Image (cartoon, one colour):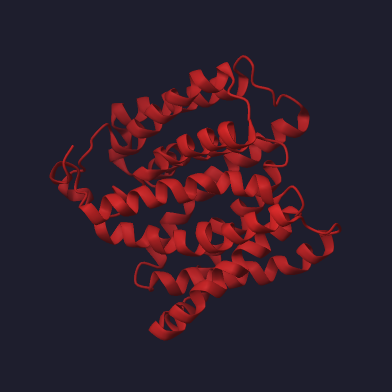
Length: 302
């Protein structure tokens, strides 16, 4: 399908592919990092590394100063987008395979539709979108309770709840950006939020990190901070500028494919019948819930 029909330029497709891969590998890197880093240490490490990478650019452009003037909402964004999700993901992946984690996080559009409904968005009441909402949650039920899925122990059930809460938080964060921080330069918002969360997590990280980390986990943490946090956020906002806020998040439908394939091939994570059956159901449900089944949004949504 040509860019003319989807609104994607060549640069847009490149950014789309980058985001699909970079945030798709995040779950595998988290899984590797928590082998020898505590979850708070993973959060502190990736946010502080990400902030350090972006700091020179934020200072040079004056974006950090602009973000500081809106620090309460920047902090709120950081808490919802980073502090909660990063810790929940890190803790959950001590129990769950990375591929399953990536798939469950892909339910973000489902919760975004629910939030839109609660905010009185009448377009979210379209039958196709509501049908997609129900289909997506049915797919999640198949994945979680389906045959052959191993995590039925109490700790694993709790971890699944943590991932679903992460999806809720990820669905809330864009509303903060859209309604409270839309005039603030994105790199300033991201940098300030990363440092705020990183510094906040530093004490618990030092208190919970008891064993020396392995080289493999350290390499994963470095990649998480530099590639999957700093560079990924920059690429994400560039993608928004290139194709618009409606089409940009469509890469989230590719992330779980990347996560599942990498987890299965590289670290031999199980490919269960429940996952095979529920996986396409979740993706189709998310697609219809988020877009109404359209590849091209209406003019009013652009």
